[in-house]
Each structure stands twice: as C-alpha cells, then as structure tokens.
Length: 50
Image (cartoon, rainbow, N blue to C red; front, side, top):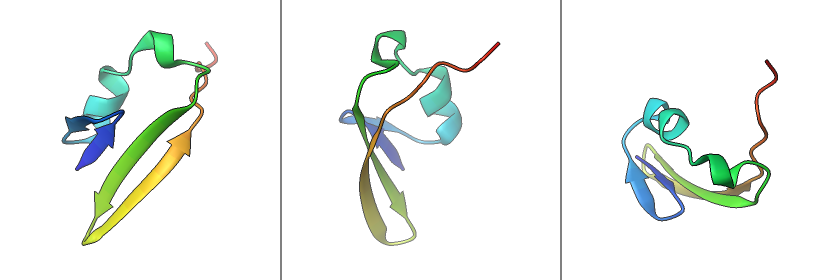
C-alpha cells in the first residue's frame, strides 16, 4: 500500500499516473507499508527531463 498526501494508492504505477502536476517542486509526504513496516517519508518531486 502507498499513501500520498492521505490518498491511498495500491501500486507505484497508480502514484506516478495520478501524481498531481501542482505538487511538482513542492514538499510532499508519502507513506509506504512494506511487509509489516510502515515508512513515512518526505519527498520533493521534480519534473522528468524530456
């Protein structure tokens, strides 16, 4: 499970395809549950070079 800014997603594919453009270059919070561990981290997403 992945949670981005309190919205639950099921795969990283969902995260990349539903990532809001207005969050580029802004601090965001991501929660990942891996096995039985919950990891909360801050990310600073950047636009991908063409």
